[in-house]
Image (tube, rainbow, N blue to C red; front, side, top):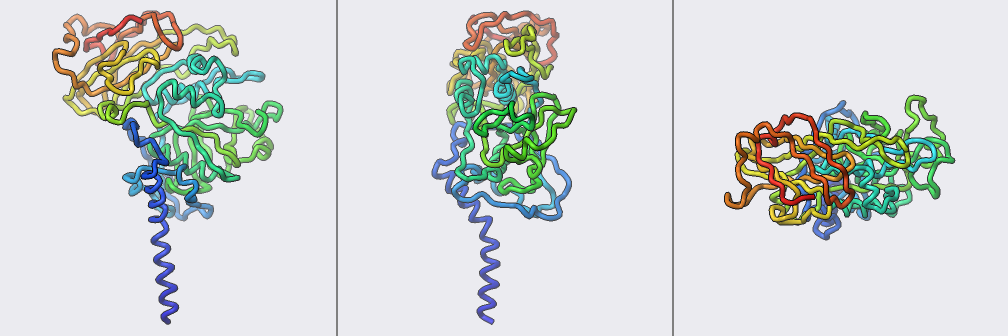
Length: 447
């Protein structure tokens, strides 16, 4: 009887201990510095959560990340208490606010701008606009590839990021856990995928064929893999978001090619089973102390297609002036803020934003937690926005606007020194509909 009692006690004890051990491994990794986004990470707007169809039973293929792969699932300890374990009544859905965009370079014999377009989409999410042409330009004009120059481009545009790494022979399960962990914290992920098309069009040595942004997931929980996990992504060919169930999406090169392409979707893809190519982008790079004064920013563009003037397509389209909407979030009503605009990445500071070499500033008083204002940009340019808590004394601020400024148009970038590319700035006839029209605009330097 005593032997039976101790066996029963040991089983109950180990069942309850297992999740705690997993959390301990993650916390210890955070303390060892294995996950570095805590330093200088910009506070991001929380991704919307939606409930999906309830799950009656956990997936039979659920796994937990092993200790040697803990770096791929590390999360801030404070967020661990909110995680849902398998068997939870409802699955969790996370979607980042990233609309679809179309890349340049579709068609046979073209390298394609998938890396450039995906980098552009990530930038828009963090309050930056970079033309697809400018993304290549920052990397010397070459095609953007994950293993070659993507990290260099992201660093040049002042982002915080980390690349996925694993020593496992089949990496897809830990890759999915890593994806979900980053998406859950508001980090978009840039991923390499296989194309289902003809073998003659594939890259050599088992490399991925295409780069896409991963923008969401639906799962029973974050820290384990499940066959029925859903991943949300864009193919850069159509505007609509796509979704794939992991068990149907993960393939080897051979099994991916054997699948038939649908006539209405010539560009279909598989997530590599054996090796994961991925880069998670945390946000705009800055000092930890300075980040306390920086609010998250986000851009909204009126068109999902950038006018294509690339040599690869020879479409001959001309860059245009377009009006974007700039959002600032996490604001405290009645406090003073200033939206700073930089037209080149080498002007971006890591601290002392109010003393930096910004192009223009738009001071405002927050009325709600979110502030939105229009601004005009050139589609072939680069433009970076930072929303800062205004700590300057009254004498250091620009003069208040006069009544005549109530009808002014959104500020137009001036022609001049843009580090990525000089572009002709054309005036816009768009009428302002945001707070920018009712606030002073101070130019700090000529471009």
